[in-house]
Image (cartoon, rainbow, N blue to C red; front, side, top):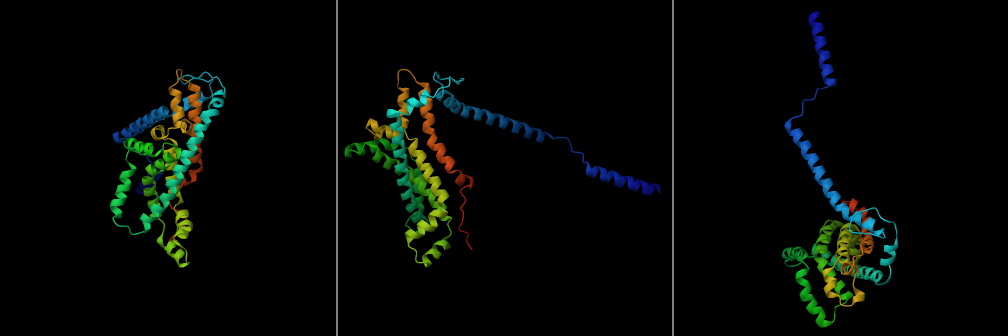
Length: 299
């Protein structure tokens, strides 16, 4: 009986230990991991504050009639927005819209055809050509502006439309490379099925390839738009008429004034950022999808 009782007690003890296990004390590696995690979060938080501080200053100074260079509680007023949304400053915003839209349209349309050709056609020296395209996307504009200026000035092209064409060419290599990767992911069987229905190449491209590769095409177009929208050096050198200068040049003129108008600078910069914010908000669904090819399941 005593042996049986001992065996029962041992079973109870085992059950109790199983239901409520005792965790071993934290080792040094666990403590080091916690310290590293806390340090990493502290550093990331500090970097976040550094990056958010300019945006906070933009917002507060834009609604402050007595704005200064410091971050302070504003004397609330919308007079700064009234100043920057009239006259030549508003016209400069319109010039930026024209410059960015034309550049994006040219680069996106030509990029789709070029990417489709590189993806589906047998082109001699395709590998070296793709390497050249990748290399071209990393060439800085600063080394190209002066020769282009000489050409533009000789033929009288120092205006907004030729500059938009030049900006579209500078963003084209990266857009072509990005679009090609998405077109490569479109199943070739879908194109063959469309051709069996006597669809032309243009119809296949418009009804099959473009809808399925739309996330990549949209991402490339956003890149081209932002590239042209925020361009400063190129319009400054290649656009001679003052009434055709885009918004970045107008922001720069604020800094050349005898007395800095911090409120107007903040308000105009905030207005200048709005189209890009709207563009990313509208395209957020594409970004949430992670640029994964949707539809078109290969069966």
